[in-house]
Length: 425
Image 1: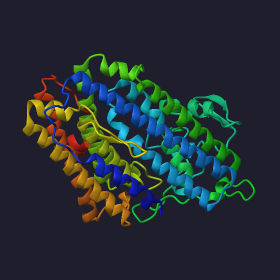
Image 2: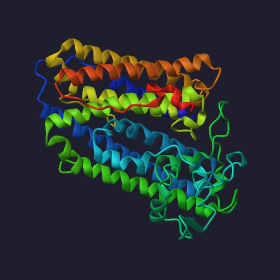
Image 3: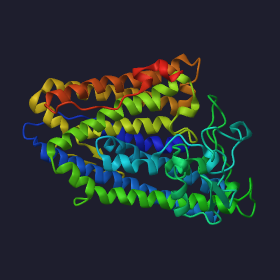
Image 4: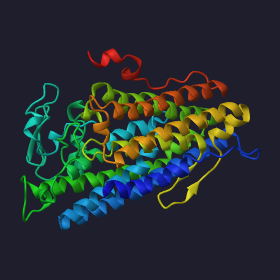
């Protein structure tokens, strides 16, 4: 099974990332050493993201060359594997503008999938907010964007880049992991019932084509994969020792520590607990899950939580199994307030345990979109426990900010947590 293959790797990463050591007296606690190691971990995470994206690209090549149930399954497995290191890198958002400005190219969501390919009739035929709601690039060699005719006769990376967030509409996601996910799985039409997307391999089979335009669909998939690789190469270079992102975060160690905590706190609270989890739970809406076509959302959330813990402990288990350790925020905090360091690690552990319980439930057969469904009290409680852990660890992150005398840091908020009534207006 796809998820079983994935989780054997994921839980190995979790086990390694959740083993929090007691800081030794000899540990280097200079901020400069901590931010240097933070930059080195970023480089490793993006290198692993690139490596797994290249494996995904190879699997896509095999699918296009010989479409079959087996090659489609292998491409899906490669996509799921590629999500592991990428999601663990998301803690580098928010505090690092270079990452935030880039991130939308690779992980933008949710998306109006009718921009890319055919959709079910239940999707509708138009949207008041998006003229490209059903543009269907795969089926149409000519497109109109803001009154300008676009030649889409050849589906290339350049074309997809030009269409990404076309018309300044964020739902026009033409590139990145989720565009590839949609092409590999198709729409998930199951609502809060069991089942993910179920696209057939024959959608890529030019000799036995289903749903038309199999050659163009394959071309879109390949172009999106090539773009993902080139975008990840950009971020690997940015975090190399002389890269722009690495130099930005290490130039001023105090500012670097602020960036680390901004990323941890903002991902914990506003982004993950709020926008990615609480919003969908409040609305009981499967369209608000992060990996909505593949039913891989639980795993993406788990790996975000592992990444947050990694930024604190200075530990990262690489895709090849090697373990990185080094001077950490934990060391800095323990040197000043050992009780606070123990508190933070305990809360990170609690969150990881809750995420692990959610992932195990999904592995047992109840997907994340089912867990957040209306009337599923037990599933709702499992998700809420993970949200509560994220909120609680954020409070301790705020205490760390105060303890290290870093001044005020604005962490990302979310109406879903701060003003839930606004969600229903």
